[in-house]
Image 1 (cartoon, protein in one colour):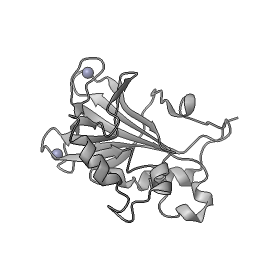
Image 2 (image 1 turned 135 degrees about the vertical axis):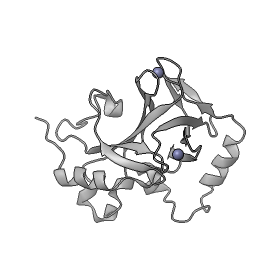
Image 3 (image 1 turned 60 degrees about the horizontal axis):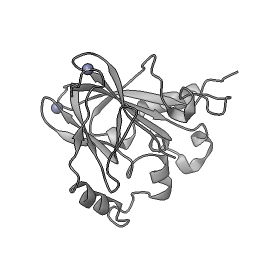
Image 4 (image 1 turned 180 degrees about the vertical axis):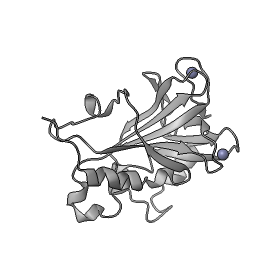
Length: 204
Ligand SMILES: [Zn+2]
Ligand SMILES: [Zn+2]
């Protein structure tokens, strides 16, 4: 029997989007019928007991436009292409109306593992930013395309999954939203409406 995550945890995450999407307007929403890779099954209940809390936000530019292009940046190891996805180190999204481009998700800056092992409270001191910035200059970014029609403009959704233990440990208090253990970035094609799973990473 799978138990639902506590209402209060889900409620908290809906009201507190993580810092990586702070440069956008983020409205909590829900999507049906998406098969996330998370934890090998359907993204739910890895321990078969309690479903992990998760939130999905629909992303809108601060200029109020809802379509973006998604740009993948490689980092030190280059790109890997897997299961229709571009595996990169960092992804930014660029508004199709005002052209503002901002980081959407970085494997080197966001999520549980980074928060615990490389907290960014001393920017620049750990060298992560500098090394990464230098590397990505040498490899040309790639714009993500719709799997079905190759179009490059998407409605963007961000999905965050959390472990159930974050509200039982005062270490995480008030910042639980930054300790997501899975991140997914989805793009709904502006042209053909296909929902593309563009980004899918375990972050712990
Ligand atoms: Zn804009
Ligand atoms: Zn399409």
